[in-house]
Length: 288
Figure 1 (cartoon, rainbow, N blue to C red):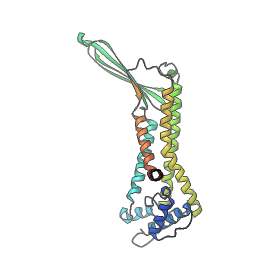
Figure 2 (figure 1 turned 90 degrees about the horizontal axis):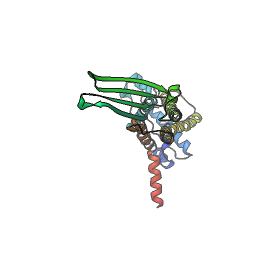
Figure 3 (figure 1 turned 45 degrees about the vertical axis):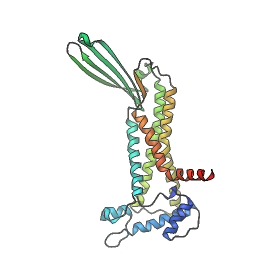
Figure 4 (figure 1 turned 180 degrees about the vertical axis):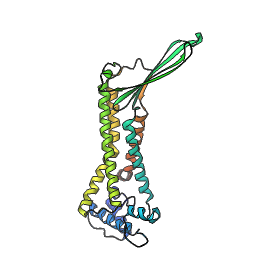
């Protein structure tokens, strides 16, 4: 079933038993047994959302044949997977972004009061695998000047090795770590979605396999929630400790993509593990 069952694995045993009691189900067994009982019960509810001929249909199959009106959506689960889809898109954007780090310098040649001057700006925008160099020239010299040129510099290329202001190896290493973290997170999210879609179309699994599937899903949630933050933190550590000569640069620092990844990664962890954090805080407050 897809977007109907609650995220049972995030609940405590006490909360699971409360759900079971509300549904009139047995309360015996360990946490895996309780989860399995709730999943089976909710799958029975999904099958009750059949078509007009009372044929039992899985969740997505029912939508396909009878439309969205044939099923009921849990708003919390819809929001849960909607935010996860947003993070998936953000990870893809991060892989292709050139705003993880920024260095910029502007110099003026000439004097505007004398009617001739040129402002030259060099901007280095650091991605995970290369640098985008932007050269801009604006001013007046025998006519208006408005020139712009862009060049891409690969971290492993010979041109990057000739630059003295920063270490290409450090940026390359930091970028590789972030790429690995983001790709693992992407694969985990796709696996979670794939399993839910398969169940939504009625792909049956044995009870034993379903219990192990829950463990795999738990691991995937943990990886896709924590690895992006881990990668962003290591990016800052490696880049900050590398040899960078900033005397010539007017503006520099970690770019918008790094800041965005940090903010949303922390928010995503808080969202995924909100119940666990709340339970832990409650326990700590009771012990004081």
